[in-house]
Image (cartoon, rainbow, N blue to C red; front, side):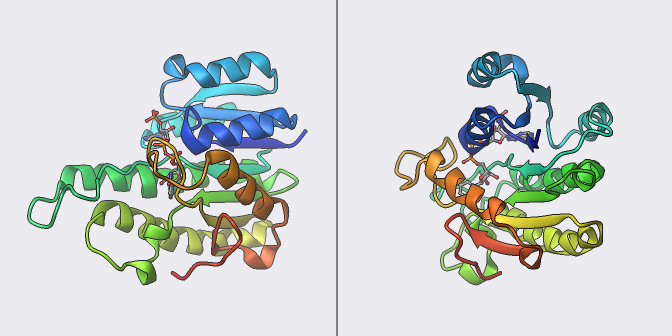
Length: 232
Ligand SMILES: NC(=O)c1ccc[n+]([C@@H]2O[C@H](COP(=O)([O-])OP(=O)(O)OC[C@H]3O[C@@H](n4cnc5c(N)ncnc54)[C@H](OP(=O)(O)O)[C@@H]3O)[C@@H](O)[C@H]2O)c1
């Protein structure tokens, strides 16, 4: 049975990844910070015996190590680094009153969190059949795409994530592990808000297509959910 692990899977895009792969009979390791409060995820796990819920705050090195130990020798075909935060609002934190504590926390989650999880679970990816790691980044991490001010913390956290993961893709290639950087589009989640044009289902469908048709020469490249390659 193919296996997927998703971070930040209690709501938004993460929950949609779980829903989709659970329905298709994959073995799903659904991770989130607070399993007891993850009501929707709990209901899903009750309906699908192939879904298990695991506590994981991606900023907590001890929790990452504990999960890696728990899943030792278990293959992970698809590792989805999805957890993320965007504390800024377009009209908040202007230059002159930047919240540097929030910026540091953004880097801890969006950048270091995804790298820590990837490093800790690379062996499980290596021993799987599909050997694919997805990194949910953002077009806002594209330096080429910056056309307006603000969102310095979020943009820089995703740009740093892109830079680190492009290198990690090279590191993992000799082990037969592929890695894709994916922008999910502007999606109606708590982060994306109600005005977003895409539903989580559309975004995950597109990203899943890319995962399904992945070729090793795409490893370390940056794509929008609909397959358009994005500039760095
Ligand atoms: N929605 C968009 O338009 C959009 C656009 C571009 C990129 N993205 C990216 O897509 C990914 C998913 O975003 P989303 O729209 O689904 O956002 P969301 O609805 O706000 O969900 C974010 C998820 O990340 C989890 N999370 C936050 N901090 C965490 C931590 N320290 N450890 C583990 N999990 C943590 C949250 O868990 P809690 O409930 O515990 O906080 C939640 O499950 C993010 O990486 C985001 O940057 C989204």
